[in-house]
Length: 211
Image (tube, rainbow, N blue to C red):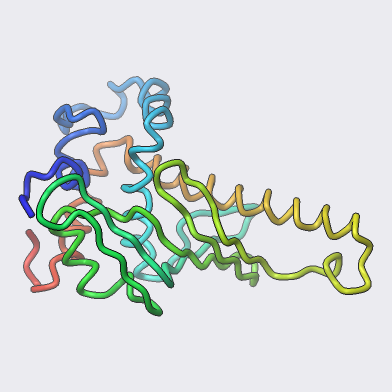
């Protein structure tokens, strides 16, 4: 696959979502932060793949990626992972298996230009475990699993069960929003191209040499 693939260039921080070169020299204080943030959210469908790829890299060391209600949210990419690209000989790769997302095969594919399109995430928050599949295009959540509460026991009132499930859905949405905000806080600043992208390159280089 060509190294100048549009999505690969975007991952490396060379261009923005509109294909225009990134101005690395611009200082944060000289940027219109509000306009930049609005632009990022407007292009959320395009940034979704970068978001999931960032989660894969950032979750590798097991540290929390964001904080919700005073508790850190740690993420593990597990189960089925789909990677896609826009050009080249291979435009899609699907991998299954426990922790297969962190394998050399996946890292090699990302280093060659593919970006995570869909991933199964395991979230740990306040000693609770949640699982969900996130699709990058619109950050859609599918197949969510959450720890059961007393309101969802066999003896529970049906109305209480509905309320408990609604609360769970809201909590999952809060997790995704928290992770997205942590990603945007890095992606909209020069730190992305100056620090994050080089660190990702080093991790992706399965042969031990950063590209």
